[in-house]
Image (cartoon, rainbow, N blue to C red; front, top):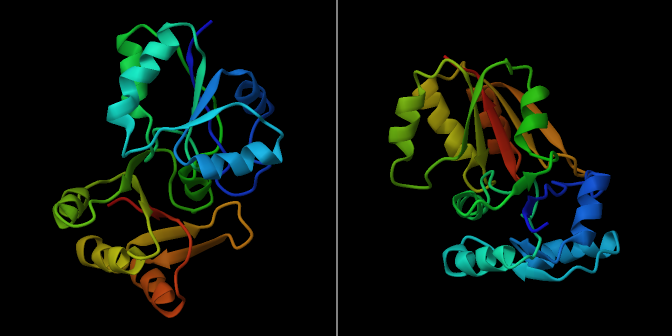
Length: 222
């Protein structure tokens, strides 16, 4: 039966993928990948020879209808991102929405998502939380933080190594220097690290230690 599969891929250790995900990646007609070079490394590791085509933020509008037509014609397609679950701060939403509009079955497998382990091991309440993903790079950044300053639930952010110190300094400004924060980087990789403390303490830590890798920030609610 033709359908769209959303397949989570490892965020670090290549063993962090399910047996079902591997089976489906071998069975589908084609795999759409955020970066075909990254996906080919995973495919090579697990001897997957399914054809791969690019599907990313720069071409998704252009190729969207093409892939909808392919599925409607009887093809089964899988979508993967570079790491983690598609459509979580990665391409995927547009394709899923269009499949739903066209009564195409969508099946999202459970699997790796960076914010879940970061949240669970943060020591900050995980019963209620809000996922923000990446803050606006420039325009709207401070306006968003001002709005979130009244949020009582735990807040989850993604951030790059180039902006992590600046973001933590803004946290000190908008949320207070003593607000608890947990910053995880390189989750499930060799140099995985989690730094916990006040916003000021963690900011000062990364001012002294050159930040590397992708970051997940868990911020205590008001």
